[in-house]
Image (cartoon, rainbow, N blue to C red; front, side):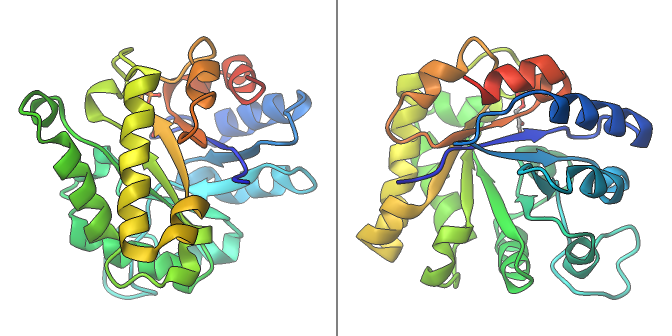
Length: 248
Ligand code: 13P
């Protein structure tokens, strides 16, 4: 049984005071217990949000990290810094990082290994562009992203890793992949994991869908066999919408 996991990725939204307000609103409301809920908040809000989440079941995530423990990397945040705050998860290889900050499969791989070394669970993002889908190479692109991301990652860690399939053309556009298409791509990712790590890992790894997830499409997505959760952008910035998504 894979436990469903719904994460809100706030991206570069919410100052510290805004983060505190939003987290308080989320905590006040009932969130169904069978779903693991994660909030990926900006670095500047992590410490205070961690304190607010104390005593709740909501988990905390960062949105990125460097792979080195420390050193001359001006402006970067290390896994050690995040670990001390007490984060549970870290989003790694989000398409916006790949697109705007030159994130590569090689650095995604390094970050995954560094996170695992420090007991931080990676939420590994993969997904194709519209152009790649139109050329009908999206399946190979995504499979290749998975293979490269997991290079040298130990089988024992599969239970700690979440994959988020986020087609880039569906992010922030209001266009969701159909639940059938999302399910098909999650199935393909699961097969790729099975190919590398075997049957047990294939059935263990949790795979989220991300891209314009909203209260009115979450149910249909979650009914699909291969989809174990959602990585929610825009709709996670509104407490009511996010709660409706979690309580789908
Ligand atoms: P939207 O839900 O705003 O489309 O964002 C998806 C996303 O990128 C989550 O990481």
